[in-house]
Amino acid sequence: MRLILFGSPGVGKGTQAKIFSEKLNIPHISTGDILRQSVKDQTEAGKKAAEIMNRGELVPDDVMIEIIKDRLNKPDSQKGFILDGFPRTEVQAEALDNLLRELKIEHVSVINLTADEEEIIKRLNRRRACRNCAKIFTLEEIKGLDNCPNCNEENSFYLRDDDKEEVIRKRLEVFKSSTMPVLNYYEKQGEVIVVDGIGSVNEISESILKALKT
Image 1 (cartoon, one colour):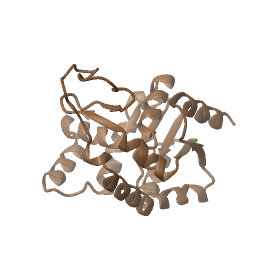
Image 2 (cartoon, one colour; image 1 turned 90 degrees about the vertical axis):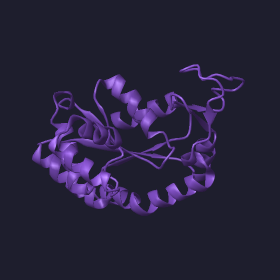
Image 3 (cartoon, one colour; image 1 turned 30 degrees about the vertical axis):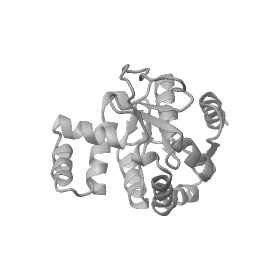
């Protein structure tokens, strides 16, 4: 199975990608993760990316496509993959289509997780991170706790800047302006499966599975 996961910040893409990665035994390909890994592994594309990032610039589309090509060519991607965080622009979507044709990869399902904007803001604003191990929790998960349940650090919980309301609203605006055209691109091809991102993690997973089967 080959999936492209879409959705606004906080809708739960990363959570669902990890679940399906484990359930289907296929890699969860997060662009941030593979970018860092490529730099660490000193691949040709990774070296280019490192030089660009060291100058404080954004990694251009052609380098990102090269990094994704390297990742999709790895043996564990042959039976499937989940792309999370890519493509982010229509140019990237077109480049990805060309890459998939080059690699003779077919039948890629595009899943769009949706949720009410105010619900997303509420959800993200109720997250807290541990200063020591960086793991993220909901307020419900750490209610009454003084120590981090992951690393046992005391009084380490804090509200990340990314989860503050004014920052969330800005991120949602960026998503709508830059990434929504990507959905339009795939909708024109009739490839988008829309799944409601509100509900429990298990309920959303079941909805995705049901949608893929039908």
